[in-house]
Amino acid sequence: MFAHLLRFILIGLAKFITGARAVGNLEFEQDASPALYFANHTSHGDFVLLWASLPADVRKKTRPVAGADYWDKTPLRRFIIHQVFNGVLVSREGCQPTNNPLEPLLKALDQGDSLIFFPEGTRNLSDELLLPFKSGLYHLIKHHPSLKLQPVWISNLNRAMPKGYPLPLPLLCTLNFGPQYCASSQVSKNDTLHLASSELLSLKQDTPV
Image (cartoon, rainbow, N blue to C red; front, side, top):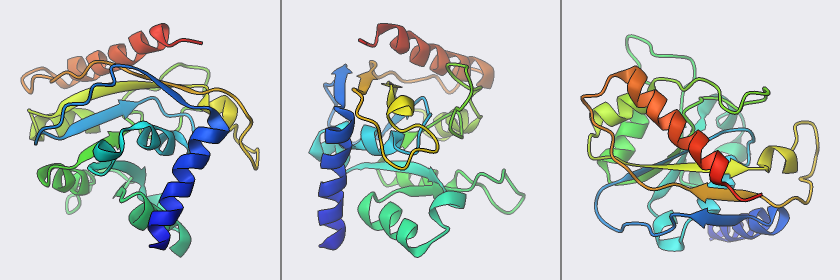
């Protein structure tokens, strides 16, 4: 009950403070195939805003992917990521012989859940539009060739929630949803990641100011 209430409050706050508006391809397909919403990553608030921008029935089946090193640190963070957002935690310590960090994500996709995923792997605090994508996106596609990919460019959230500021600044944020597509599992890793990166940068050009 408390988690449900907190979820409702956070969704309202995220939209109110940032003035978030969702534009682009907003006709979400309702079928059994999971989707992977992938976006640029500049703020801790990225997944909250993207998740809050989805229609309620789509949101119920969509789980944000977040770094275990941050969200596993305190009981409060664990409560928020698991009970409020139903998130999937991923280790960012790299692949070990006995530990595949993508295993929780693959399990969620096997269950039919969709995911919110940031291919850069960490927040981009540089002047580059995008950091090089990690290989996780490619491996998820290899395991789930029918996975529907939907790029989302998030604009201005890094300015609304700058690092070091205790509270967000009032600034209009825009989420531009691109068209869904399926990537061939036969395409090389470099080409798959290059295409995904190009799709995001193309959306950035089309995002209204």
